[in-house]
Every structure is written in structure tokens, then in C-alpha cells.
Length: 292
Image (cartoon, rainbow, N blue to C red; front, side):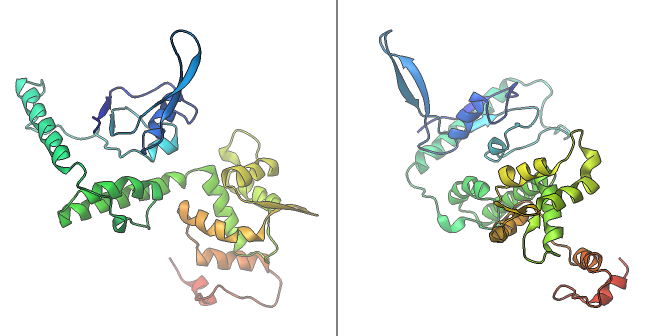
């Protein structure tokens, strides 16, 4: 049974996915993922040694980590912006140390009494939220017996999920996905062209970027960031038709919801001058004339 690692002033100069300390913290999220270090044996040869980094950690920072994978492994409590409670003294007294010791002893006693008696209950997993969040919250839910407290913790997990989806929605990948969804609604099923995605991206977001937005750059986002497979055609690269199921999952992951009215407008734009019009299922053309 290990203790809790406390890191104060945890605002590291580099906190992206390449930082060494970030890799240690990421590995420490799960059991069985040690960190390897090369150490000298008797001052001669160097041999690898595995260090166990699994265990609870309490990290105090002023901001967020740059590595989103590490952020997704943390339960964040923001303490700024609140009025100090009246029962908290401005200058900590000797009672603070005494109360802190009592609290630590109670928590330690709970761990000793519960050690080995609690098992993770897979039935508590909420499939509607991020898998990483589920991985964090299920063990906590498994040690709670009070139904009210358990439901309150579930609500916290749902709020975290909403925040993660909202954060993703501000990424370039989300902007590209929104355009892909627009084009998907008017596609003839032969694939969505990277050039068309780039053209619409420039129209909608081109002024927001200092760099030049090109089909090549959009193609890199589609292939490397979104991991969508593309196919080469005579007119250029298109997103493979077989990626439709993956696109549906990506829309959900980035919180992109379809807008049926917008789909109708896009259909009208694409088929302007023709003698037929098929609105999406469940939506009549009369809704186009309705006010907000």
C-alpha cells in the first residue's frame, strides 16, 4: 500500500507530451506501467531498472498541463475565484496541523480497513462518457456505498465529460470535422474531396490563422490528427467512403451535432437550378420559412 505523492508548484516549464515528467505521471495512472531508467551497477556497466510510479497524486498548479492526455487523467478542482470562508483563518494556527493530522489518520484508517475488500464493479461504468473518465471514476464509485453520494459523483463525471468535449470543439480538428459534416450531407457517396474541405475551411476560418491554409495542410489534419484514410482520385484526394463509421464516432467525440435546417440550405445550394429537392428525413421544406 503506497502513500500519496504531493507536488506543489507543479507548473513545469515544459508540460507537453514530450516532457519526461509528464511521461512519468501518465504512466503512473495505471498499475503495471513502470518507468525504466538506466543505472550503473557497481560503477561499471549500465543496466535498466524499473520504477513503480503507480499511485494517487495530488498536484497543485496555477494553470493546465499542455499535454491533453495528462489533463484527461486528472480530476481538477479550481480553487480561485471563490470567497474565503469565514471559518478559515487568514493565518494558519496550530489547530490547522492538529486537524490535518486527524484527517490524515482517518483516511489512512479507512484505507487499512478497506484494503483488499473492495473490488472494481464494471457495472458502474457509464458508457456515455469518455472512456478515460470512466476508468478514473469507476474505482471511486466502487468504494462508495451511499446512493446519494454515488449519484453526485456520477454527475461530476458527466460535467467533466462535457468540458472535455467542449475543449475539443475549439480545436482545428473540430473545425475540419464541422465542414466534413456539412459536405457529407450533400455528398453523392463518392467521397469528400480534400480540396473542397480546404476551400470551405478558408472561407470560414482562413482569417483566424497566420499561416497559409492549403489542401496539403488540411490533408495532414485529416490523415494524422483525425486518422482518416484518404484515396487518390483523378481530381485529387478524397476521404474514403469506408471511413463513414469512424466519422460518426469523431462527430460524437468532438461534440459536433448535425443541423437539419443547415443541411436543407446546403442541399438547396448544391442543387440550385434543378427541378427536384429532397429534404432530410423528418424535415419538411416548410420549416425553412419558419422564424427562429
